[in-house]
Length: 322
Length: 256
Image (cartoon, rainbow over the protein chains, first blue to last red):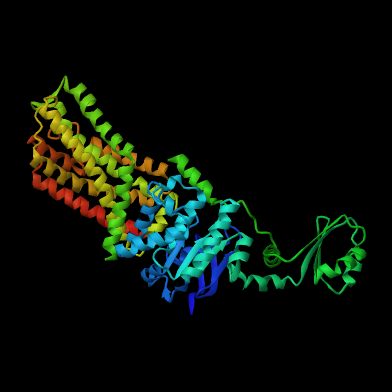
């Protein structure tokens, strides 16, 4: 059964099309990644699927319910971890979870049991009575992850779950997401612009650019599309003609004094390439990554580290202003 | 079931935050005391109003002023909630926008009522010790005053929330609300009697919704008033109904 199904979903803001005729189907139990640069329409898609904004046209069904006409039923079926911090820092971790349980109308006994369970899942049991303002960025994300799960949602949405976190916290969050998908058996939808995140976590992924889905498949399938290993050669006078004659070279591109080759079995064929190309300064061989896939489909690199919605930065600004 | 528990959730959060931010309570008490003792005491040394001690005369007005400021400013917290994503967490919960709005009113009203109760008890002490003579603040009149203040505060918190639901920045909220606060306060007759006003001023005083609770509080605490208690009540309830209707609509239209 499809837990999410959109049909020509479109959202326009003042004439600007943020999401453009999106058709997407996500199956039960999947971890699905929506990958794209900033401003590609990932968050808008997510806000529409979670009923927080209404689509301009088209329809979307979440857990079988229409996001506009049955928004209450949709909201009961989903859990969300937002891009920006969404816990109250003047409350303790426990109080934030209790508040969530009340908002979702959970029975007190079930609520207390779930608080205990999810706190254990994200290793925050011993910090539950500390004010959230004393938490680190990573801990706060974990708390919000726990909160998103508390009411047994069928589908969990994670909007840039590791944006602005240090590498160690990021790995932690990934481990929790893997654990919870196994233990709670729910579908997870992640938006991100980190390739490693999709590669590590997702069963299937879609690359989204300018509001449209560019390509959709498993990370392995998409990497296969590249058609071989990537060999980057630095050389002053490449003998392109000679390289072209080699039948295991699928694609040649030159940019800024570098030659990019797509090669089948690069390990075996490297010496022949180097003989053909002439005097070589340096060479690098790597298996195709999602970065290569992204460049292949969109013609541009995904820009990292300049996200305007830096999670940690927002907390800092918020504290400063207050 | 879910709506009632949601209503409690919204109130629970506001109340917990209020209890934890003690500086909010202290600041909200200090200002009215300064008005009462310094402004009232200073001006009162040379004037009195129809035989009533000036400090006693403005005491009901200062109660209303304290309620006005803390109620309207309560709306700024919704702007802060929007700055981070806490507002989304609430809006995405399976409860109606009306429940969220009413929960916020009750949360804000609790804060402002606690402040009012402290000021009422303080007034009783000041009167009993002879510092501000002539305040009738027995149990019954304190309860009645709190009732009047509850209606006033609920309406004013709604006004604050309506402004907050439209504002993107706390600075913007501050700007808009200060445009509103001072006219409401000065025109309410909190600091002067309203029975002998110049012709140009009287209409402004009559359309100020704060005029009526000030008048009603004066009736209860000092035994004098300009309008009948029924008129005061009618206007207050009408104003409350109006802002609740507008507020419910504003919350339904509120963007994330």
